[in-house]
Amino acid sequence: QAQLVESGGGLVQPGGSLRLSCAASGFTSDYYFIGWYRQAPGKEREAMSCISKIDGSAEYADSVKGRFTISRDNAKNTVYLQMNNLKPEDTAVYYCAASVFCTEHVLSWGQGTQVTVSS
Image 1: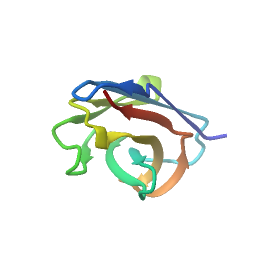
Image 2: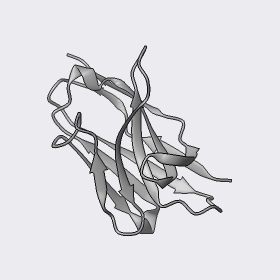
Image 3: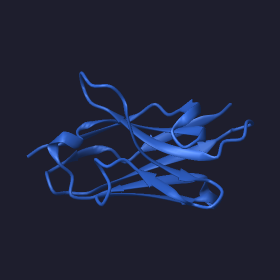
């Protein structure tokens, strides 16, 4: 059974950093991208970044470009999201998902991890 498990969320002060992890297992359908998304209370889910399983190429939403970095370790089937210079508006539940295209045609979602940026 396909499974994605996020970890690494928590409470951090503004300007701080966190690294999220997304571990994939049990996939029988091919996926080509892992993406990170977030959903803040009362807001729609936002796609932030994706990385290709094939060549490691990445894309970012304008809202996180320059502050967040996505990376992968194919040997561990794990994708990371390094988040620097966090702002209160980054507070949300963060999800990873496996998809056929970058943030499109999602095959499976993780359960989410809470990130709270507050002093």
